[in-house]
Length: 255
Image (tube, rainbow, N blue to C red):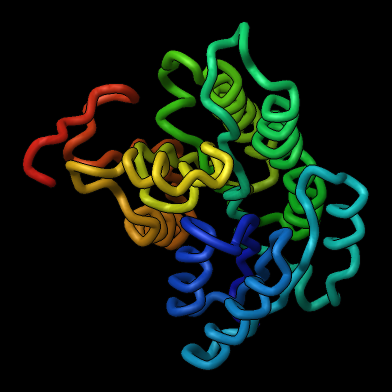
C-alpha cells in the first residue's frame, strides 16, 4: 500500500478537500465523519477519479468508545497510518459569555478538544509502534487571538495550540512529526454550523471580500506532509489577503 492518511471530519470543507488532494498525490486514505452518506459519496468519487485506496470509518470523535472501536477495527494493513489530519472541529453559536448556551459550549469542547485528544491517543500509539508518523492539528486564527462572543470557541482553539506544542515534545523521541495549521476565514460550512443552519447569516460572513477556500488549506497541508523526513513544518498561519487579524477584514472590492 501507499502511505496512509487518516482525515477526521472528511464529510465537508477542509477535510473533504484534503482527502481528495492527498488521494490525488499518492496517499491511500482513511476518511472519517458522522454523516455516512457523505463518506460513501466521497469514497466513490475518489475511487472513480484516483488510483488510491479508500477506507471509510463512520463514527463521532466526541465518543471515545466509538473512536477506539473504529481504529481497532481497521484491517492490519490499514493500521500503518503515516499521517493523521485532526480536522474535525466546529463553532456553535456566537454569544457573550453571560448569554452562552451550555449545549453549544459542550459541543465545541467535546469536538475541538476532547475529540482531537481521543483520536490522537489511539493513532499515536500505532505511530509509536511503527516509529514514524505525522500529526497535523487544524487550529484557527481564533487559537491565537480572542474576539467578542467567541470565548468558548477561541478557548477551545487556544487549547489546540497548547496541546499541539506538548504533543510535539511528547512524540519527539519516537520520530513523529507534529504540526498545526491555523486558517483565517474559510468559506465552508463553518458559519452555517455556527449559526445553527441560518444560511442568510452564514452567507453574510463572506460577502465583500475573497475568503480562503478549503482547497487553499488542503494545498498547504499537502506541502506540510510531503517535506523530507528531516523537515517538520511546526506552525502555519494562513489568511485571506483581505484579513489582517481575527476581527479586521477589508470588505470593499471583493478581493
